[in-house]
Image (cartoon, rainbow over all chains, first blue to last red):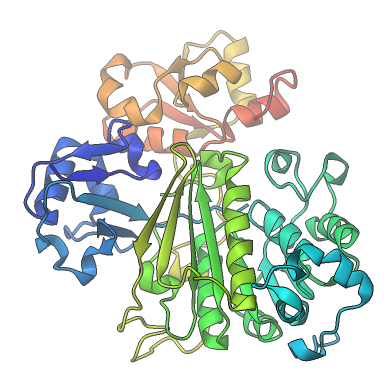
Length: 91
Length: 390
């Protein structure tokens, strides 16, 4: 089953889980499943128009989904979806 | 100010003393005399002398980078010492540049150190960057990160990027000619307040050490022309799991600053871009608030005040006002535990989270709820000095 990796800034909204299995055939389905299980994640991942926020990137294994088929990217068993938000700490 | 002169590696001759100093570099074919001369001729600008800047500057200096510039206007704070290892206890209150200069020159007197006691802005970034070969980004906020990126692309200087949050970090090399830039990865910043700073979210002390040395490594590799730099690669560091993952980064052909049809050809107002209006005040200027002095008066007069503490349990253990603890993230689920007929004063550490809690409760119909301005920190500063601050 594909797995979604939740980055630490967002774990407070995913019931503190770092990785969640989702039964899904595409990235879009996987993300929809994620936010329906954890509705607090929705406003952090999506804007008011239902589009994925641009400071959050979604990778399938090591490829940015923007350069695959975006939400239509098909998933195989064992695929890892990573949510990679921007962080700025340095001091 | 004297401009920093260009020295070709072949002209950056090493004295016998330097040859001895760098012996462990020189005996490796990947560095050798040629590589060490490249290091000596190199000019690297570090933005920030804090968490990331500390290990960056220390290791680049030790390695023999000839010219190091550091940009930092800040002063050493006691809470910095947990991770900003270039500063020591005796430096608290001193300018970070002065503290850093002492340590760096002590490590390597051959260093040509240039300090810039200024905030990096759209007005000074381009001129500053032009004098250097590589820029290492050790800043701690989104506007400056976008500024550094854009200025690097516009001046053609690689941007050795590192960032941290709690116990995770990212590292990459942006703004090389054929590689992506920061905007290719993140076209837009998050709204202000969404991603906590190190002061608000905490950070594992070792983490900037781990990521900062990765940045120093990448800088040295770029100078030497050795190894595979993190161009087109995003390294994700998970310190708790001790896992290192790599994601592919592509240059975005539509990137406004480094793509084929560039629309950004000058530096912009980055505060505006990141949605920050003026100085960030602790939130709560336009919601019902109460000062720590007034709360103290109410408690002394035995008024019926319900203190709601919206911090996390581990913070409650450090110090508390005997408040009723509902962490702010749990408030929606536990709002039924609160009595809206009572006067409620909500507090957190500094006033930010409690302001969110007050807004939430007001939208839920609570009319007698107030934010404690400055949080328990203000209480410790002005009402009860025996209370620890953290």
